[in-house]
Image (cartoon, rainbow, N blue to C red; front, side, top):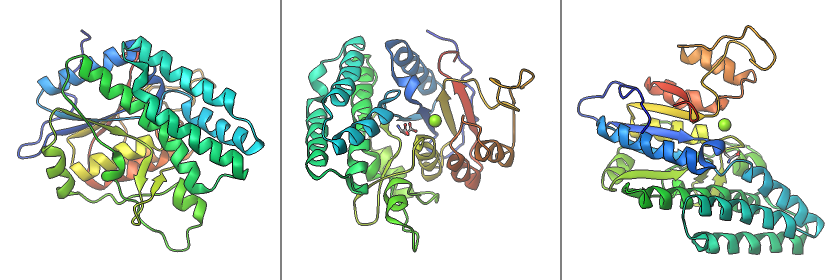
Length: 303
Ligand code: ASP
Ligand code: MG
């Protein structure tokens, strides 16, 4: 069992005490990180929070899906598909899960890629469906692992919770591939989640538009998904679990004197995210800032 600071966030009286925990691709790619996630959930629950886990596709899978689409346009995608399938099969094996868990999603991926090969082009809608499969595959494994580890989990489709807003004159690509959602509190969602047992586990990156079609929130958009969930649920806090310990005053790979920043305002965090700091997605600050929800960046390998 790892030791963590339980009092990450003050609990709020008369609230759902939701705590949104977002895990990036490297944080969901090995047995070791999943053991950490399991322990963190147990500790958060013991401290009186209701965790909502939002997590990314397995590390590099979104890049591999993009490469598979490009390969399919050119006429051959077998190697790319095989790579994606085996990454998940390896992770399933490491987590002690049946590899057949993903058969249906893998079959859908194969069919979509075959369709792209046939027409030799990728429409934004088809791209969304292919990219969404990375998040669906990862969360299917994540939920099954936590369940097998004795944690009650409700897997839920993020597209039933996050609806994008139509922006007038927005082009088709950004409407489907880089959509935005509202940040108002959502009491209906709070009640719905309240009725779901255990930990709620869902995807980042995907949402639905007002016509009910799937859309993406832009590459790296899982941070933003987690922030939308925090805003809608009026969460006690948002934790972004990643592979670095926080935001730095400068890029620590380039500037030797870069300092880890202990505390910063939403505005300062926004400036760092918008000017190329790669820790937080630039769109993930606004939803939590809107409601004054505290956000913490944490490192999964050093919890
Ligand atoms: N999996 C998606 C991506 O790599 C979303 C995310 O991880 O934030 O862009
Ligand atoms: Mg990220």
